[in-house]
Image 1 (cartoon, rainbow, N blue to C red):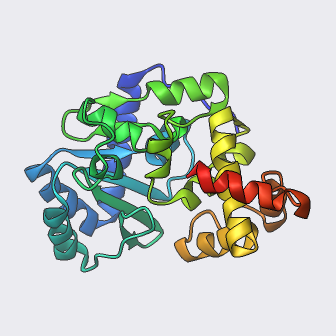
Image 2 (image 1 turned 180 degrees about the vertical axis):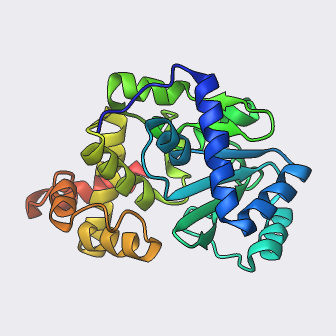
Length: 265
């Protein structure tokens, strides 16, 4: 798929607001929830929703970050949706017909919990928490502020990269499984190259799963199915082949890998 850089922020702002209005008109529960959320805090839409609006592809999910604490957000979600289910990345999950909504509080965002972005603005911190440059898209529904620079670099270079090049940042993400599956998906369907640090990250975790669980492929396929994460988008044969590229299969190297991985984390 041919991706487009964001070079007209006014048009994208119009398109985002129009898409949000269309979704709200079809989902009264979401409409009422957003109205109350915007009354008490800034609400940010992030990641794939913005990317899909900009590239005019099908919208299947919305990721929201609410600038509030987790207790207040949990009560708000319970009030409007009657559920407080969370996924592996610790976002609250709401399913409305064919629309999947992921909601998290700003204070409970993983990089804030581990104090990994104390010197950054709120919108920069949220962009950073997307983990990959391809997902570093943020739009404030109250102020219309837009963050998209890292995404544009990704599209221009056609290279997937991690937002911060320190192992501290990498190891604290709550769901490396999600990051692995996303990277393989982006590589296949958007024809993105993997940066050296993305390849290194995938290699470390995939080899660890293979050594500790006996099969990285089974571990990640089970995870994808349980999270309903890309499980219908990555063909099983491709998934196996892509994962195999990061696994050293020879028994001769197994002990060496175990020692290396023991110090890698």
